[in-house]
Length: 449
Image (tube, rainbow, N blue to C red; front, side):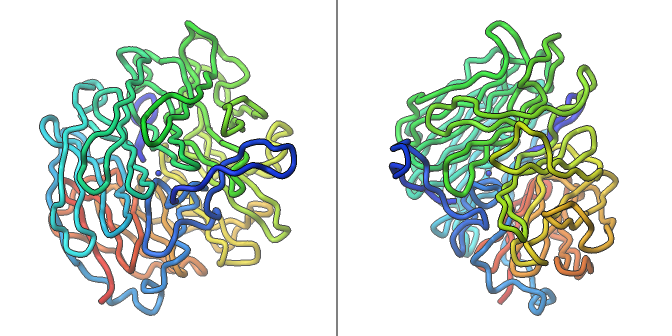
């Protein structure tokens, strides 16, 4: 998704099935493994429901093929007064992406192979005070359906093949509500977060579960009392590999209320949205809410962990089943709000967590304890999120170019600079030997022969 802070914040698999748990007959949501989406797919923010940023099925891109990565196509989708903020999503040979144009069609589908426009539609405009971002959320694709945040305080369900709008869910959270949160689609549900644009003023933070086919509201959970603003979910929901735990990171406490779920990492029941556990960090009234979407990962002991970067500059890691007990380790990295970490299960013993911190520094951390895998490296200011595939780390720069790094060593291999490069808050989608990202007003596709 997206970048966001009180001063400036930047801006999501496949459809699982509902199943009955043999233990307790509780309804759970089955999802793909945390490692990422199916081969040749990047259907939501972070590549999959665990938001790992890892393309598990990618084989064409790799250290040996880096020098052969070249432009495939480029299309202009327009840009408003702010750069594009969402990451493209890729599914079934189509690329879906939103634009920040101030009027007209602002959501597009392109042929992933050649960039031919398949359709476009208008998902609303009107949130002028959000700096002209218009669409900030990354869409989530589930088979023939997709869910996208609009530019008009609403989320939309669309037919992926034609762009026909199937439903519209109004946020109804006040005049400053804005669709920052990139939808999560799992088990026939679309999970969305409710937040404000730049806390002006704050709205009542919530997470909602919608029927992905109809948009019907199935459940909702607020994080502050009725009539109180704060605890907005401007980052995006995440779900555990077994589908039993929904995770959100909440935001601000600027309305004078600092309750147990402001500035908190919260675990919820994915069916009822009942709150199970939470841990809050940071100090009140200092814009110290969570600065990234949670990611799910594991360590060499096979512990299932969850972590996120806080705007106090610390990456916190938790055992998934004991979040309420507090973090099991933490590492000071600094923060670029909205820049999501990533996890590669194949680099190092137990995998490696990659965190983009302050001052353009990238950290490679042991998921068991936060120790360095290799010395931190400095690139350029980054936005959107880090992406991983087959031994490569892709770091999107605010300048619109993409750094390619060997994930096992931290060695910078290349910087991909598209024609007409421009400012960007976009992450990189990796699918089928191709990278897709936004730079200025253009959607770019680079890949190997």
